[in-house]
Each structure stands twice: as structure tokens, then as C-alpha cells.
Length: 308
Ligand code: MN
Ligand code: MN
Image (cartoon, rainbow, N blue to C red):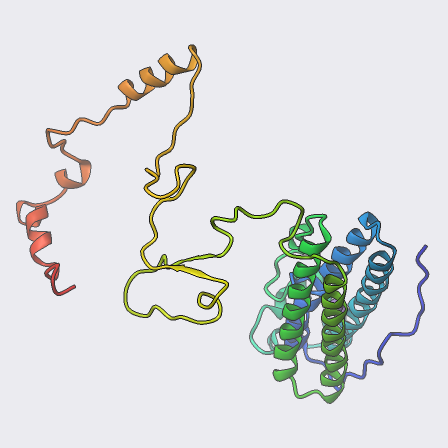
């Protein structure tokens, strides 16, 4: 059961109308790192969770995120309130109205014209909210890691929003919202470590031949060694080769057994679409070229292979 309390979780005191700033705040209302995404993420995880501790925590945090949605939505509404009234009542000259709703030069005029000041469930670029922002996989050790990262991202977006406003009331409310994401990150991380073992995620162990191997897959200047690829826990492979069931010297090839009906059809298709390796078919592009712009001349204009 949900029950609404008319008081906000944190008092919002906005100094003045600022539609441009309101538009940027929509990032945390209807954006991927925003409060609706967080609330839906943890609420749906709570519904599916059987562990009593995690279930309770997920309901607590998802309900708090709805309270945050109310705070950030209220900030948007307060920042837009004056401009919304002016636009609805048509009290300004057109040019003055446009200047007022466009604010800091972002898409805030769209928010005003399409949504009457909102708050609308879009991000700061006008992209509609989508359930695709939620990446729940239904395994707590994977979902808690994703929740930790989601809280880290939300914290960073709030930090950026704080850095671009000088409205003290907005700054203060954003500071509360940012701080709560830090607290949530701690709870999720503690909850992850309360599961033992929690790594690797799931039940199947990794293949022991590859679980402690670091493949140096990027050749050239700039190879760097650090704790992520050196020490007792790592086997650093300088020049990786294909691996497979045959172990060292694996051919790195792919194969599949086809049944009696499939094999001839696959062969027929291969014959029908076979490349001719000799000959030089004329292309439409070449027909449109003059003699001087033949491929040889284009090549001559390119830097030497050695210099490149
Ligand atoms: Mn939040
Ligand atoms: Mn949070």
C-alpha cells in the first residue's frame, strides 16, 4: 500500500524563475540516472526479492527515490512557475516571451511549449523516459553491483547540476539528493558483501584456464602494468593466441555439424553467391570519373605507407 504525505522529504526554496535551469533539472526527473528510473529499478527488484533483508531495503530505498522524484519535480515546477503563468496568460510580447522561456539557451522552450512547464517525464534533451533505463537481471549479486553503479552515476549528475546553479535553495536541495545517493550506494555495497560468496555473480564457476588470465590484446606503445594485470593472481599473456577446447595451438576455427537436408542447401547458396576472383567489373562510380581521377592517381595523392 502506498500513502502520500503532502510534506516534501526536503524543503525546496527556489529563489526565482529560471526555465533554462528547470530544463537541466529534468535530467534527474525523467533521465536515465534520474529518480523515476531509480524508484522503478528498486521497486521491481523488491517485488521479486525473497531475502527479507534485501526486500525491506529495496522497498525503503525505492520509496525514498519516489520522494526524491517529488523533490526534483517540485524544483522543476517552481523554476518554471513564473514563465508558465506568463505563457499561459499571454502577458508578454512574443519576443520577450521567447527570451524568457528559452533561459540558458537549451531546449527549455520545448518544455514550455509542449508541456506547459512540466515537469514532463523526459530528460534534459527532451528524450522520453523509458523502462529500458532499468537493467535488472534478477540475480542479487549482479543487480546490487548495477545498483551501486547507478547510485554513483546519479551522484555525479547531481554534482554537475550543483556546479551550474547559483540559486542557494536549489543548491541546497540538490545537495540533499546527492548525499542520499551516497548513502544508498553504501547500503547496496554492504548488502552485496552480506552475500558470501558474491563473486563471481551466479552459481557457475569460471573456466579455471581463463579466470586468472590477462590478455594483452592491444598491441603497440603504451602497454601499462598494474594491479589489474600483474601480481600473483594474474597470468599476463603478452601475445595472445586463439584458445579453445584443444588448449595451446587451438586453430581458432568455427564448425557446426549439418544434417543431410541442411548441407546441400548451404552448399547451393555458397555456389550461387561465390566471388569471382579475376576480372575487374566496372562500377557506376568509375563511369562518372574522368580518366585523370583513376584509382592510380588517387593512390599517388595518399601518403606513403611507411610514413603513415
Ligand atoms: Mn534519489
Ligand atoms: Mn538513490
